[in-house]
Image (cartoon, rainbow, N blue to C red; front, side):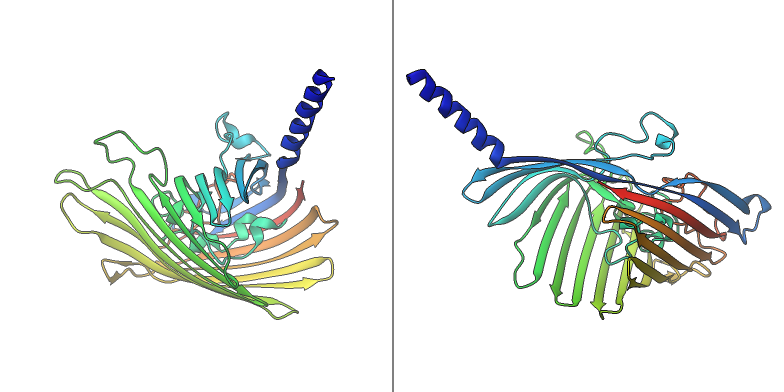
Length: 375
């Protein structure tokens, strides 16, 4: 009898444990055929057409939570991005946990997360990333960069920041506040005495009430402390956004000011700064949604001096049709126009589309037809 009671107690405890813990597998597979045309380049070699299969940021996510009692929960997520058409053409190009990956706790006090997380970049942009239309049509092509598409011009990595500790406060009457600190925002922290680590800080507030959503985000990053012999780099950016749902359409406005910063040893920062204005519009039409975005990057200023012909514009239009809650078909067209000294590229053009970034002064246009399945 005693053994039976012990066995029942063990089973009951085991059942309670399973009831309080959840693990979920989710994600999406997204790909399409993309034709990209380069034109207007000063050199003939920079012009031409490339056609191929483009990944749309496919991923699988393992996530879970455990009820710790007293309103406290432990949470985790392992987000793996993979280029589904060719795995990035190298064994390490689609690494495990390459996406938003964290462990943390949440409760009445809010949510604390530690790991690698999307931070600041492209706040208030359009929704091509979560639809079957091309990611290359996204306004992040301008919002996430300062006159270019390389790592040195990407603000907040134009994706996730590493080595992050984040606190998100409980929502208060529609207002959500968030603060993030990174010990090294684009790689490992580095050894003592090196200049590889640096740090970054981020603050964000979003207010949502009925049809209106407004938000602001501030980002600042720098390399390790400057010395008499070591130069340093940094970034600063501020984004303001608003979306209003009119019922027949949702209209947004995003205004972003971003700067990359450089300083020689024992010298002050010199900023390369630009502003971007973006207007995304989404129109529901039965089982489908029409997307239109117009974005404009102003001329860059270096140390306050305007650099001629460094601006660009991006216009994109798309249609996302839902076969079901999980499967959608997307078609989109994006047109990027660079001035003669501008070097912007379509978003994830090389990382996911697998085609070259634009040469300076070269325009790009892409037509895309794709499919997205979420699970």
